[in-house]
Length: 222
Image 1 (cartoon, helix red, strand yellow):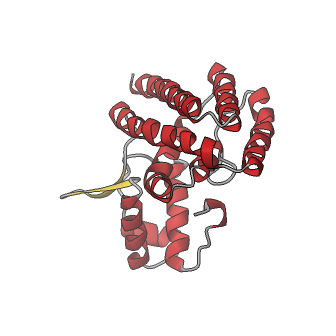
Image 2 (cartoon, rainbow, N blue to C red):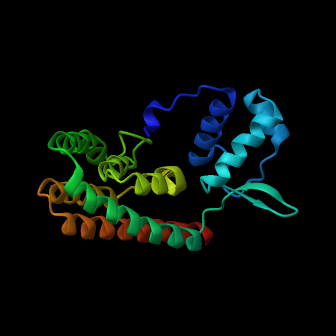
């Protein structure tokens, strides 16, 4: 699965990808009710196409259906963040461990080059997050695990919900530099084929990120 090369071969695919992007990037706000009629007009498609896209987004955990309410975008809250990141910490920690064993030397070199390309963003002090797909550090390591079940659980399950938190809450200030340094340490452990250390560092990195995002959510609620 490569998110960069996903092809919108049908109107349904195109609508799904666009609606997913709009939700992840906050063009459609968290907790918003989704109206099939309004979305059909927005994307110039039928309500049936919108309904299918919404159903697919439910499986991605970006949309939830409730009795007497209908479909809504999930809300970003501290409880949801903690629950999601507990799962993420475990699964991506495992991915890092497996990547240290299964990634080829060329793939590791590409990962190191990717981090080098991120350095300018870090030095500029801009918000530090990557687009979905091959330019995402975490995405590369997930694929590098070479475990199809794990890849499916992450990329087809919670990947875009994780991105929703990362994109909308962002990562700025001192956390940018420390997160980048954590990325470098993880890659070094993978390069050294030290799976145990790679897992420890990845889990710690995700925990630190969760704590950072949780503080932002609490501040927003004040």
